[in-house]
Length: 469
Image 1 (spheres, one colour):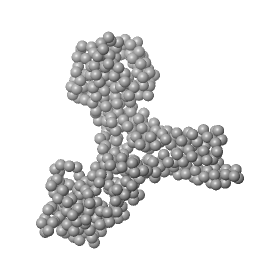
Image 2 (spheres, one colour):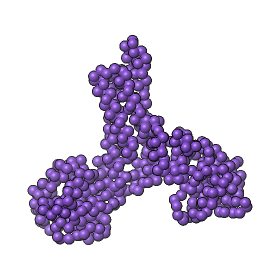
Image 3 (cartoon, rainbow, N blue to C red):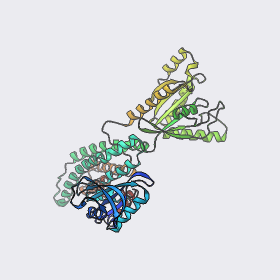
Image 4 (tube, one colour):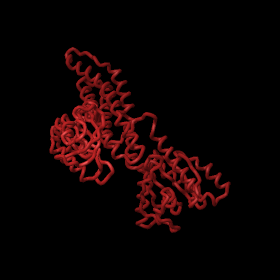
């Protein structure tokens, strides 16, 4: 068994801080004998008789030789992360000192923790469920505020509570249907089919938004893709450079300069956006440029938001409509923001005409922009517009956002099984067939929280954690 491999009954120790020199280093110890193991090498107060959640000053020593001046924090079971007796030693952040202290702890009865073993113990002892354990890893890996917020909500049990509520309701009906099977010869129904159908509708309506949120949640982790689309010389590369505040893309009056996609990540109000400069869209016989245009089309399909930019002085409105129609056809779900470049070079009457005619279906907003060194204010407005558009489209108050592929797949499996139950109810399937599919849905939901798990899944999850966590 995977859990037996970890041997959750002995005392473990590991360095909890990242590799390298730092001002402070932390070593964690957990297990029934954690306090006693540390007390053997600690010169100061007797740790064995101190209260929980107290911090003590002293020295780590070996044969009366002082190795370092430290602070030791005591957490007594069950009030610790692992629910076991736990110690945290705060010492100087020298890798040599940290290693020496760790070796002393191992010499005095602890063993080196395996990757993720502290979190595994918290899971095994019921302190957290599996989705919360995964949230710990997400918090450590978070690269922006939005990703951190989602992980914190999951660690606090937001997803766990929802899944437990749905699963418990299904369990009640499963029990009643199982009871029917015990009285199969008497042809009785303990589970009201109308209520069951209503419950499944309710659960599916709850699951569907979570399934749909995965696209957004996955983008939060990797950067929300924003494609910059337009015709050659529309100002796409200039726009990218202004967004990044650096000369990242080559700007030239020669049409077709950008032949491949250029991607850069930018943080806006705590969310990461992956801006993608693409080749200008036009008909061409140039084989290399055609490949670049094909990639641009692909980026349109993958984008969550699209900046469509056009030269307001040189481009006819009919050409703009043609481009926008293509964009909507390729990705009607994305937020589309239309940018009229060089609008300072056209008359007020032309500006009004553009604004009136760009009442195009699916367009989030159209704005005029002049791409120059003095465009900082306009670029900042554009960033805020993008942030609000993405947030409004994907975040609803209190909605759970799925970022984990394993959770997403489990929700899909649960929905598939529930859809089969609904079909079975419509076709008056027997109790045993209904019970089978309800159990599959319960199993799938249980996989998310870890109520149903196997060694392979646990090894995959906790094996990715760093040692010390």
